[in-house]
Length: 281
Image (cartoon, rainbow, N blue to C red):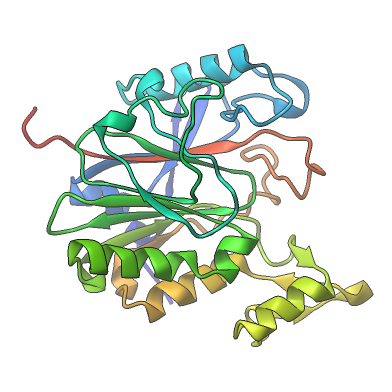
């Protein structure tokens, strides 16, 4: 299916820095957002070069400088971003301006969750990934955004559809009035799991080969992106309102960190989304 250019992500270069954005989200004019790459930072070795996460072997000073460089592109203060403690679960939490700066500095994150929600303009929600998929949500008819971290456990727990249900139940946003963007993630060929994980996904209903395919050595190819997409569509998101990067974090070592490819010794990309303040500009 030809989804059109606005249904993918654009790679944008600014000097040595590079990041991805969804033209679908850009066209809405409602949010600022991006997904970082590993280009343009000051980190070295396994973390080279734009590592954005403290929970790595990198120095805090280098991570802070990387964040400063990145958010400067968006005229944003890296010390005011909001992060949660990611626990590879399905907990959803709401953030407001009282949480501004949580997670911006080392050991400052307070809430443990894998999906962040806000209605506050200019509040920058962030999440981190190095193979897991980040899912961005934007309501079209009211100020409301969310950002979910959807890895193996998140996909198994249906975090994508859970966020959609939460936004409908708590904010009366119909699924058809949500736009969604799905970040780069590890592809099925690069992501193989053992029989225990495969059984868990089978029991959760992901038995078809397009989601779970037998591979050599008793392993199984797991397609996180396909599973997350299926959940969103089943939850009522319109296909025309979904943008998918389609890039594999493992297949593109020049652009992305990959936990699987690099055996855990690697950095993290950051994804962020913020509601634009319609009262300014």
